[in-house]
Image (tube, rainbow, N blue to C red):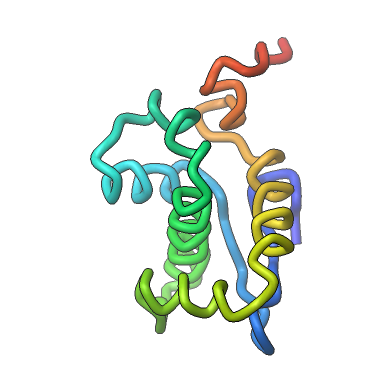
Length: 117
C-alpha cells in the first residue's frame, strides 16, 4: 500500500481496515462536523474528531473500490473502543501525517508547518 498518498491499513480486533486519508475523507468529516476545510486543524485536536476522520477515511477507501462500508460511524467507534485505542490513534496519525489534500498536509492547513516548495 502507498503510505505517501494517505493510504494505510490498521488492524481493529481481528479485521484489517483500509483507509484513504484524502480530500474526500476530509470533506466528509467537515460535512459531518459542520466546519470548513480551514477549521480542520483545530477540530483534530479532539480525540473523537480523529476517530471520526478515520471512519471517513475508511468509508472513502471502501467506496473507491466501488463497495459500501458495512459499519456505520457508531459501530466503527465501538470497534475501535474494543481494541487498543491509543495504538489505533498513533497508527491513524502516522497515516494522516503523510497524506495531503489540495497540496498540503493537515498540519500545513492548521498553520503548524510551512509547505515545502
